[in-house]
Length: 409
Image (cartoon, rainbow, N blue to C red; front, side, top):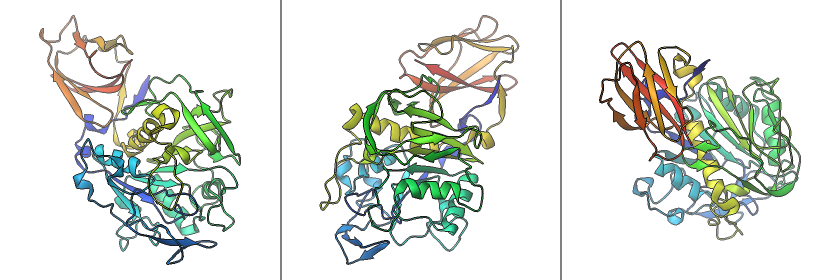
């Protein structure tokens, strides 16, 4: 069966470039008892019935770059390094080697505007956590073009009737308006947010051992906890790639009651969850009552889920950037796969010179050389000391290099 390997570094060095991630703050993400920002040094914004007004309140007014500078983040840096309910998420991104920024309340959502220093063309991932101001027609077009040209959009909603800035719009309606009413392609993602309000802890997760979001670099996601959130309805007829990966308790793994879903569109990707509570690290705007959903709720699974999604969105889209590989060519076999880390590579045509092991981020972990030349009997590999998850092998012979996905479980 032919498939496209989702790892660019088997072929190029594209990941030597920094991945830029932009957190939105233009859609009243700071209104009411919410603080969906990675860092703010000033608290002087108010929301009467719509956009932010400086000097009319005490909500966070996040700046473009978090302070202290992210260059000072180390593996042991705490989320309190920055002041924002999304600071934990932001710090985790920097620890992965990403560069993070905020689009301030008066920033512009554009794509292809050379006069905008924060144009979406400069970023790989755009994260919008519970928007409370509807997207304009121009902004919808920019978002669609951003995704279509290889960007990753993370859509985070909250429950119905959650209008925090009193303008008549709440996040499920805002996201559905964007999805279904844009000038590029309506209903392109194969998903819509339901107008629901429910709270529950769910372990209703399909068995998908190769899924990059459920079993990504941060670890295996086993549960989620919605604290007044909503769900999604999926429509594969609109987008065949749409997939639900977490469902409400008791629901079938189908097209209704998905709590987390994702899809591909053009050269880009979209991911969606139905509650903003998992993003909250419990600290931020001192004028708000914040709760620790990122680290504490769902036994710590929210950090794994959100970061696995972020990493997936930031990873190059195999559909346009990686050549097609035939996994059923008889000259190369890997058995067993999945494995406990111990497997054998057989190549009946060519001698194996070396095997490089990569993780999901495209980082080479180790190079292995067969002691017997790798011909005939095969090349035995022992990776049982590696964490469980998805890896990629770049198998080099005297004629070619072949990339294959493996699963260690």
